[in-house]
Length: 126
Image 1 (cartoon, rainbow, N blue to C red):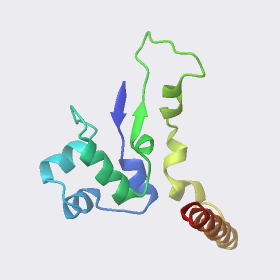
Image 2: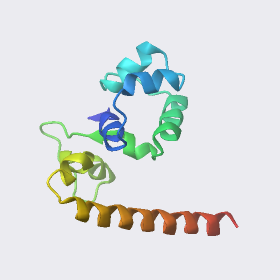
Image 3: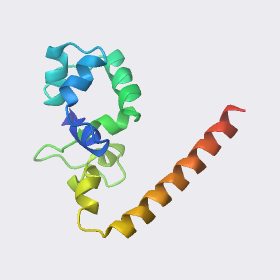
């Protein structure tokens, strides 16, 4: 079954109050609650777009898929890409026991990657 799963994105981005963030972005408190708890019965495309803009992500990042008990899909099925592992979601836990000097190296690598990505985006727009 396919679920909206935004908490890991908020966590990875260090957003401590996702409900407040969503309401400030224009979601009603009711919608924010349902989005955060994965209890939406339907997903409005304008909400998906607003979430992607807010969280700087792609629509596929917002969803997680759990197969039903007796459901078998081939390993190449696209839905398999939406199965998430918990360790992917929380960078804070990943770096918790890394020495600070190594975290600085990781930060430098991330900055370098972002600069490369920004450069490739500029080339695409030209």
